[in-house]
Image (cartoon, rainbow, N blue to C red; front, side, top):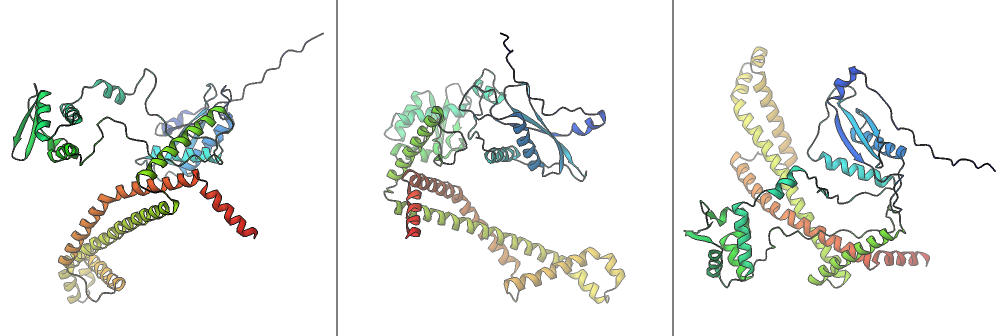
Length: 438
């Protein structure tokens, strides 16, 4: 009996095959290059990975380049076919198709490109890497990581570490703290209100006020000794920020695998612990109180944001008005002479710029008085006074902006976590459905 030979699956054809004529290379040398790593390979052995074909990866890469360039730049998408990891290399020309302008890169473009890539992956039912690790696990390191590991701590860093070590011993007062620093071979000096330390063998003293950290001034150290100020030791990792609970019903990652189920359970347990601690520490023991506090924090932040925007708008108005008042004053004599000349054309040609600036200022004044319902323009001194007051208020608001924004984000995330954990949204949907059925 003849046995037929085993059939083998033919390899996938290359996605793109092209050559460049010499004439086009001068254009491509100025091209901007970007890479997009597209996820799992079709030959990946792990069952919990998404399988992505090479044509599909090329299609997603093409869509990424099309959206990023808005169709204004020529681009090429190359999909690697000789590796186990499916990924694209994208090259696009820095000059537009109509040769009218160049590609304008901007600060943070890599993050914008990453967000666009994530959006495309989610649109195509693919998972994304939320928090990619920036450090290599191999023996090879980038220069910044290698340099940080190799370099010795500076004198100021050593002083900060010794201050933390002395404060951890719980000195009774500032004099006891100074004694602990002297035991660590640090010389103490006071000149007026300035407090300085110098290590053994160090050339000069270091003032505490020059450490660029408000937690290490004399007043701050006294507060830390008395317990009025709590400071985390330097070098300690910051606690992770609150994250929304992972929505199991809408997850784009394949479900049912042991690895994924275990990860989702651990993730939700961590969020449950964070939410529970926050609610307990802030005495938010019922949903109504939590909703009121979340809404109050949101309204407070929105009011602060509106105040900053209003101040910005008014500051711009004042600046524009001051600019036109200055132009009007400088060109007043020229325009008066122009009127006395009977609007002479020769005089107009000789002083065209000043006369145009004078007319523009007068038109601005008419529009300003009409929009603000004023009979008379404010004086330059009153504008300067108002500008200084608004600038001071804006600076004060900005000092609270980031703190209130972070607090608002935190409590809104906590509220969302609590609603998901308690099934609050599902119960609300059930009540609405029951009312509709009645």
